[in-house]
Length: 485
Image (cartoon, rainbow, N blue to C red):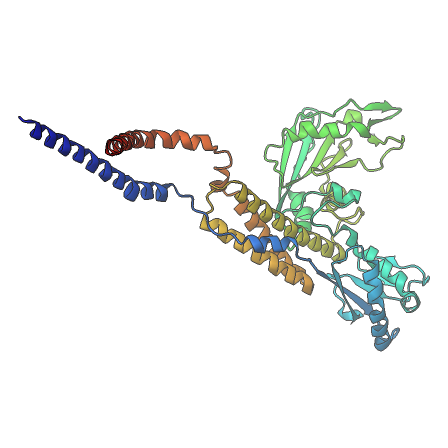
């Protein structure tokens, strides 16, 4: 073996090393990196960011249909139309909400609908300076309508309760703050609490009574939300404090009532955030008659109270009773249920046309504002987490929500509450499904250091030998350059 053969062998060896280095580098660059990039790429469907931001700036207009019912024998239609035209500026000026369109139209008395706000012109109102609100509508004398347009406009605004139609925030009204959150579906859970089954043995199953009294009431609200109801019995839950004897009767203080909710709530079992709880607490006969003593020392005539955002409780006297009277129970609980739905307190257990109008308006506005808020939260979340996967099904739900919001706003402007409610409910369901999709929630807490822990064991064994080889080539190139110089 001569020196020339040794040099040729070294040249071939170096050439082979260079060829291998070039070969593996090309394999990694041309095949490995694109394949890794494609398999680890985060798919993000396109979301309509600008449309969602524009929805936040959209002015939601609501058309309020106000029918003026009149008898042609008492009022001239021509004169009435002139008065109503003159009244519109007063209505807009008195309205606490700026986004309102009033559609005031004269309607013959026999054609007036009970499902829309109505002003009834009647001679029965003797004092022209005062209007009377009834379940069917607002009674106004023709003399007042002719002489005091501003006062009538104020009465109409107060009658329509426009100051309570707020979908994006709680009203300052105490009743509105006690109401349950507006949802697309709710379950009314009737719970009968028997603290001592050994002493209270009267029949107390309210299933039949619920079908008779609560069922028709909730079916009247089908257009507002999807309502269901259930009954159950809970045992061995005592009063928060022992009733205080006061002569021949007993009482518990008003301040102790909230403490009754906690032990009952822990035993409700199936209770969810969409449940409206109606609780019938059977009072031990040894503590009857039992009353609730207020902070001012007076006693409530009806032993029932509201728990904000939870439900209503009635303390039912079981002494000298053969069974729990379902009619008596629900005649007390249904007015409480109306308050929990956001209506004003009243002794009427039926839903009037005006109350149904208010519920539909409030529900539609709430669904629209909550849908817009949820969509804005979604795009903020997507922007804050670059590696979040956004599937096509999420983009479709977002698009469905946007279409629903726009259709609901258009229907509100036309005064079509039923259509507005339908589209607003669809929009809210779609927005909440897109925001709470499992594929999004799975990546909320996936830190970047976990990615490095996965990729480094893969790339380091492949990349380190190549890096060392390139450094050797660089050193050899520098040595040759130094010899040449």
